[in-house]
Image (cartoon, rainbow, N blue to C red; front, side, top):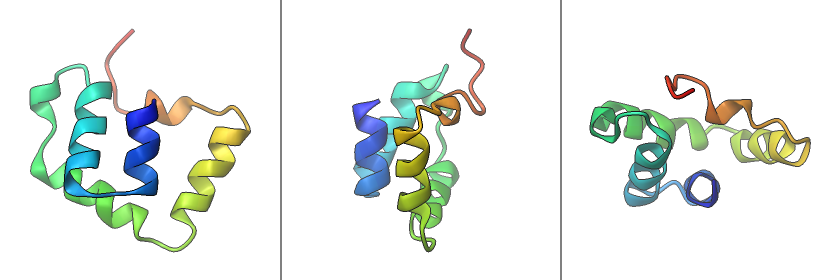
Amino acid sequence: MAQYVMAVLYPTYENVKSALRSISYNPDSVSEDSIQDFIDRMKQSNAKYRFMSMLLAGDYSFLNSGSTKN
């Protein structure tokens, strides 16, 4: 989860790639498009604030979205 938080707070290509690969069922399935999309979303107004609000509220469901891990 630390990698994911770093990717949110500092959405560089390498941070995001590392974070998405660490939470993906198949790390090789992380595409360039998904990395760029994450970076673009983190640039939206209040994106980091919304993420931190979820984190502080204990809502970790964002880690499971799109994942096929059980």
